[in-house]
Image (cartoon, rainbow, N blue to C red; front, side, top):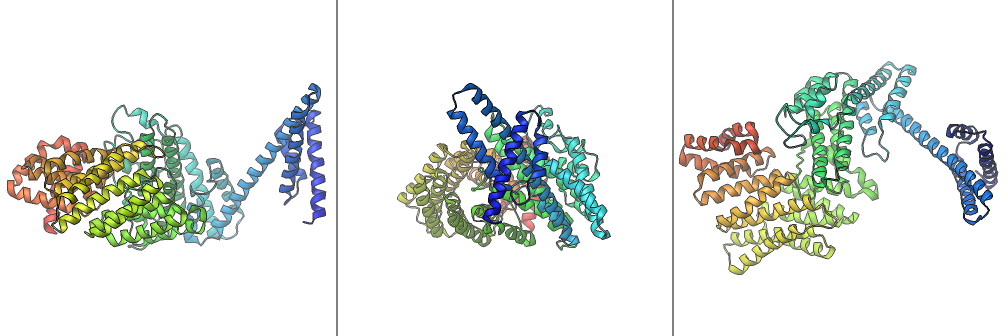
Length: 632
């Protein structure tokens, strides 16, 4: 467009704006829809920016008149002109929004149609990604279904037409299911008069799943919700449906997306209990991520990753990426993600996308931090270190200092697990210096805990438990604890403080246990269990229970030794942490000392305790775990 063209369009649009204002003041235009039609009839493609500049120029002129005008009649006229111009602005913005939505839907259909047949579901899941700058809402999904239906009827290629029809049908069914669930997204919370809220509870009776199962009529989501209500994995159900129609999987995906987004939004808006709301938001994201992980595993055929399995794994990655953008993302643990093989490769490939966008690099660094922490719990130390090193580099390049400090701390903890105590001390000191320089109190508290813990273990390894080393190390651990109790400012005090306290109590308790001071160890480890329970950190809970068992064993309290060791063994085994064998080893020794009958009596006498923490299934599984340890 030439300069002369621009001038002519400017004159034309200034005239158009004036005419609409005049017609509005004369009563010839009475609604925003009339204005929208006038704009649609008179604006040319590619000239929107010129029109916007003309409109803004006229608005500025009228506002200046209002500010400088003292005559009441002229002021009143200027006010009417301003309202007319604002109506034009609203109509223009609404039109632009509708145009963008139309283009978005047209682009979505083009992407689906261009995708290979086996990747059409995967492509749709990408379109439904909650991380899009403007995620599709329910109205847009309905419009997408309608447009897909129309496109399917006009396409000559039968296979493509059938797939588009299937996707449209799935979207429409999902809208019907969501309509049935509307109003019942959180109703189950109010129907449960007592007990823990969230996704846990008595199988088949508590939590949202059974309530949702009663509301949907489609068989696949209904069966899935029923399985979840019984705490059973979705893997086998996915196998049964992996050869079903495309529409079945489309419907399920849209329903789960709506439930997930709705719950997170609702939990985040609970001002009366920020801690409870944020914890349940995090729990919601990971529950749905794990659910999609189970569906992906079940969709695999003969161990090979099928197109359906790859599509089902896409929401897992999308949820993790969304989780990483939250302020309450757990840089210091509490959430475990166990990926391997192709799932792990898919995760890393998906996370390369943020690196191509300079303003979003920290997402990958934060998720790699979580993956590294998870790898450490299952004993894959070299893989954990590789993740933390890469996360460290990303954090530096993106200026995410808090994440950088966290990865120094995680590297320290991984080196402790490898008994490389000098390297652990070095990483802890670097974390401590950086945390103090930047005022990161959480990072400082974790660094002090790691430093004190590393020094105790290092001195013990060298058989040099000298009084000055012992006193300095314990002082570092106690200082970490004091810092964790005073956490505030930008952090969520309750959640982050409990997580940091759990690590501090755990480290201090284990240090005292290693120094053969069981009574002091018990005091801190029991507090560590309580703090870890608040944030749901199964690893620290399991580790604290394990060392509590050893401390009580040193005090010849076999009953408490058995109870705590059993809890530690079960919890650590549930997340595949290798330390479960440590607890199992002590239990095997105690069982050999007191006999199986006395051992079983202790379990039954403490049945209430076990049921409150690991449930009846966990209690029944304890003997099997001990036997598994003995056979291995």
